[in-house]
Image (tube, rainbow, N blue to C red; front, side, top):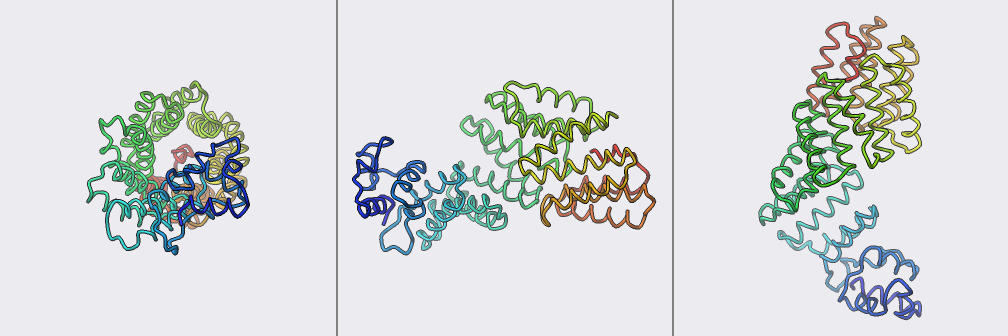
Length: 409
């Protein structure tokens, strides 16, 4: 039984006419076309009709146990709409039904698309490994069929899945593939823009800072061409951080101030991230109290919005402020608070930074044994993320006495 038939049955059971179901939002003719299967309802339409009939949209999703054939493409269209509306549970249910409906197929476009959309549903649920598995299956089939657009989109989402799994090298390789596929293709510029942005971040995490700078610059240039001010602001955020790590902190500060002064103004989330980094640059230039004032403002926003990863990161910076002030007890307590904010498998690079900071704190307190343990723990997390440059930096810090500013990079 298809979606239209299920809507018709629910309507007749409630004694509602097509005109009554249509109300002022739709026409009777549209309801008739939906019920006869001549028109597939959008997610918004389906949601409204479900509410009027006292149902959920899941009640209208065809089941593979039904004897009637399922329109898999129509079901995948619903999955796409659910994902866009952040209705993840409904998307996952639809995607599973679509895959079951073509379970007898061993290849072809339809089953590849079913794998792809179920992968996207797992991705939305932050289930990285099953998402990767499904994307890899669909990628192989799309490549065999020669569907360039689907190949490019699958590489893009594989980048997200491997990035979420903290496999930044693989993520960078997938984003690079998207950038190569979309070169000189105007119709693919929107996805290329995001790919350049994420490529910059992935390269940064594996220590390829010069490559990161190049990717962020490409993203900014493309964002200007497309008139996408928000993504341009994100690219400027990345450019500033890359410049800072390369030792060009004054230029990084100028870049960040330029982003903060953009019109239209950055969203509150992006503005807070920019201010967070601006505080780091100010601290690196010796303006610690100005940095602390900015970070305190950022902490309030991150707490209000529940952004625990960002909050943990900025707590690590505030701990460095306390080290600089030689308030060692406050510094240690702040590091511990930051670590408590992260789940066991979350944010390996940030965990590495926090343990390295604790190691430095133990070092300057002449607790050399504890310092060595903490440094080793930090490198373990950097290895998990493939952040080889961070491992090298940690060894440099372990080798001698270094100022707190080195930990700001």
